[in-house]
Image 1: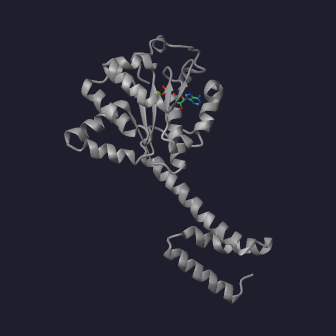
Image 2: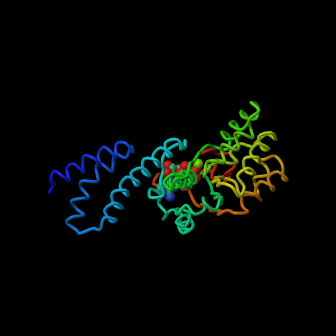
Length: 264
Ligand code: ADP
Ligand code: MG
């Protein structure tokens, strides 16, 4: 029941919310005021409820913007993932979903044959990170190296690495599909080093760590890289046949056995 005094107050709230660029406060103020009167809320309860509407709407639109700008090949979520196909990682992934690994600058490595959900889970962890307020960038290992090589040529590699450290999460998909030249391996090593104990990486690979020497062309570089990546990391081993081939009467492809050469 709005008296002229309350309707004046509502108008003032609308103006003030406009000045704050907080449109949800305008929407919530009147509706929650009625609810507050009916339910006998304290002034503090009411103010908290109104502010909460604005903050949660801002977080949601911030998350949407972070998800859009992350560069995911397709948006996939943990809710979309069928853990019955990968029961061994269910608990590990549930623990990662809280986003605590990001504040601890821990890494996640997803290993497994093609089609087992590595890109899906890497994306889903990225989406969860964006929802937790972290900036995220997703690209394949090859794309990361191209980006770093461009920066290096332009004399701004250090600046690029500093800029990337402001992202709470960088996803490196498909480590191992293409072997790196020595320069590329060194650039990739710099990316890993610059994030070590500062910000998280999620990496996916179809190769076990023992196969990484072949990717980085050098046992010493590969060992130093793996050392930094796994020092604070969760390693998730995905198993089994390709999810893509389910229900098609094909249990496996010859290429699945020789994981190294098959992009997916
Ligand atoms: P990988 O990167 O390991 O080759 P992807 O993550 O690209 O595999 O998975 C291939 C396709 O199958 C994607 O469309 C992905 O969403 C889907 N997929 C894979 N595993 C699952 C799963 N357990 N539940 C739901 N979808 C899955
Ligand atoms: Mg993939």
